[in-house]
Length: 53
Image (cartoon, rainbow, N blue to C red):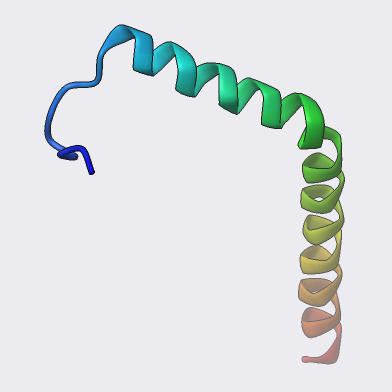
């Protein structure tokens, strides 16, 4: 296992960035929709709490 304090090589940084980009391309839309849905639920819960008080 590599040390977390050692600087990463530029090749390693490129590989990690490419992996992140591939994941975002594959799952980005679903992640965005889940985040929006979760935000809507949180807002609805806050509104309900305000109405009940």
